[in-house]
Image 1: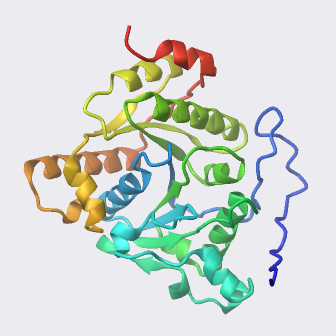
Image 2 (image 1 turned 90 degrees about the vertical axis):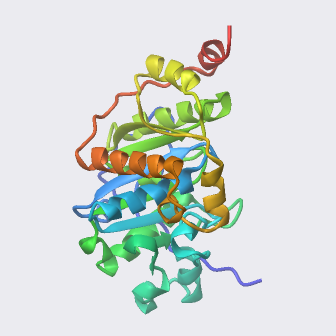
Length: 303
């Protein structure tokens, strides 16, 4: 079996601070900053609807006249398929095809235009059990800068893999100005949200990223999210109801802006447009405080 050795990550020598006690999180090359674009990272429990949320938010930004780039950060590389109508090759796939000689790539090898003109990139991830998601994010940003794509972008959305379990998948926080958390009104997604709050607090010590609030998704009610927000110092900034039409949109490989404009669909479209405008206007930041695991168990649930 041929083994491809990827180039090592450069760790800048002047970085001396840690992102938290015992932190071994990946520090990206400080030269690989994303220019003047507004950058948002979308996090949440696996399967909670981050890709659906990210894609519809991308379209909302585009409808507001912005040039949008969505970067999927998941080995499943399905973040953008409702925009492009098919699975795209990942950055790691195309780099591997040229033995990691990035100068041999063309921009159309890894950037694809989707619905409403949204530019789509699937970063992918390392093979299971090997490598680091931070490397993947770093190589993707580097490649985008080499091809000057970020010079013509107003908004970048990172759609990030499931739960934050390692520093690598917290790497988009080193580029983002706001981290948005998608959560349903249930214990598991709120438990995951608490870990994400902890990760964002760690990154905010050394980077500009701040919590941008919670997007309640697939939820008729928000009482459990409201309980957590009140204690953690957060706020719900958008509420997407549990509509079967949203599930159908994924099956149809379509965004909600392409679905039949029923009153319910139009209301959700307006909620995404309202959210996009509030983010462009510079919505408030939150200094969220994570809870200890036992405290979450004690907090949530019915009396």
